[in-house]
Length: 427
Image (tube, rainbow, N blue to C red; front, side, top):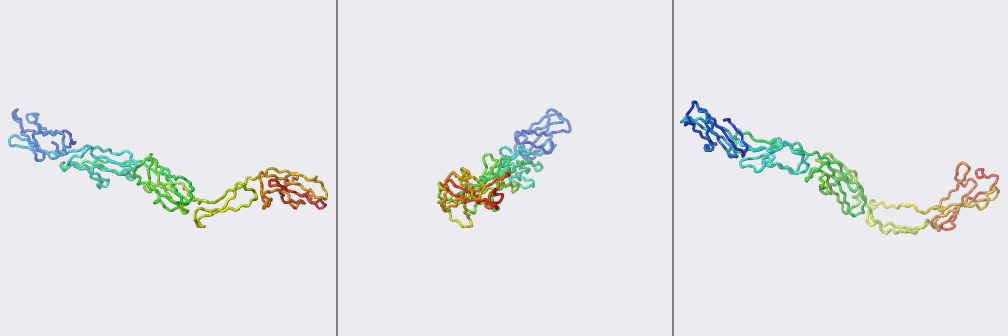
């Protein structure tokens, strides 16, 4: 017999003990064979076969070998008082079920795998070791609550100890290597990108972190940050929540009763294990103050005088709010313009004038208003090459605009008497 044999648990085992005599014996003579397991006689499980007159084989059969069957076996054989004994170590093993490498695992997922399939037999102990030899757990099941980036390419060794195995039996060991999907942040966005809110209202900013692959359910390895300008306000945000597709996460920043100090630029940033940081485009939060008691006049005319008061619906410091008035353009326009010649323009020493009649589309209040500040009139002279603006220094004068009605006005260009000193440019 060989000195050591290993058998898989639950298998049928046959161990041969070869007996060689020094001289042939007749048909009625055979050696006496005794089998021992440790110190227990188990001969009744054996059978003897005569191969030749000097060669016999004793076969020990163990049906469905168990952990308790491991140990040292003795085969003793002899004729009369001449007895010879030989020993063999029987080691019991369990089936190996671990794959050498896992499929790609998702970050944040729960992972478990059994070293031994099914129930662990009595007398068998299982341990999981890290690569440095330290014990990770003394259970049959390797359990990792959340797969992290650091788990990629990490090896775990499952060792199986059978208490009844002889000391020189090898310890069973299985190694499994974890593979983790490469995961990174594609994009970080804030919605809305710009928001205008009244003071004391509620503001909700949503930050969406988009990944290249699914994760979860754990998200502790992803860090997210909220900033107002450069100030970290992450403690005011909600925890990360995974969307249905597991490829994006959402966190919100809730600002209740928004104040002037809350206005500004907001940023959301995210990272996986504090690296690969991605910062979004900024979001603007603008604060409005409600304006009270502004009346609306729909029948105003150009030239009317009104006073308006801007009352703000909030107490504020002058340093917090700047109030200003903005002018909107009027829809009043010139409707028609034509020139009337009051008399023929003939060179003489008398005065002549041209009158320009102007009509507007709507009334203009001229009672308390200088009409020339509203209706602008310019006169031009065509000297054959280009139109040239006429000025009072050229022997002519432009009289103030005169109102005929609230919609019609006259501008007069008066020529001075023509004398020998009249400038040539006037002619």
